[in-house]
Length: 276
Image (tube, rainbow, N blue to C red; front, side):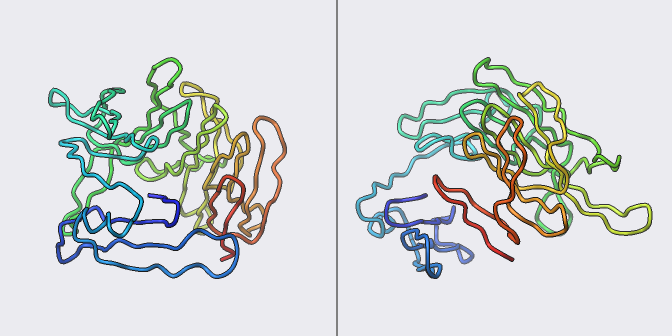
């Protein structure tokens, strides 16, 4: 939740269990100086949360079997709901409780989703328990795309191998997705042992013009794509040093913004990054 005077991170468990993480409050975002230290406060319920956020209305809504995946826009969530015994991707309006069905799932779970005004892209999988850990690993992964203009759903045709012919892993090779300017950009991840016995780790960026289109290689040794208008920003290491690059689609040459640089974030008028 981003408020006018603070950034608030709230635990999903407001019940007071022994392992519950408290809410964290960061000061007003700033463009210079030291990063603000978070102020940590225990929050026992919505009434106390409301007192900590003066001027902001906090309400509770029971979503039933609806499992949120991410926010579409303020007040609207994208998630999965059981309908007639089968999982379905759906949107829910938190104010009214109205649901907008999108499409039935081909798998049981949605692990991630990305969206903009043109498309909704999501990753579906089956979850396999990992013995002794209490966790799971996703298997039988597919990535699907809903075209808002045509209301058609397609399965994305993911690249299967890098430019050198080394296959991408089928369980975790799929990485980040960026949507913008009517286009879909995704990164594919590879970790393997090369022919000489050396360890190979790389990300490659691919571009598709729409849900049903083939992905074409955009650039090698690049990842973490993010759009701002027609500009695509990403991390790229052509000489072994990570830097932030940007490229206006379609057709422009990529240009270096900053190096060295680690992970970055885009705001409406700035790029923020670390230099580690």
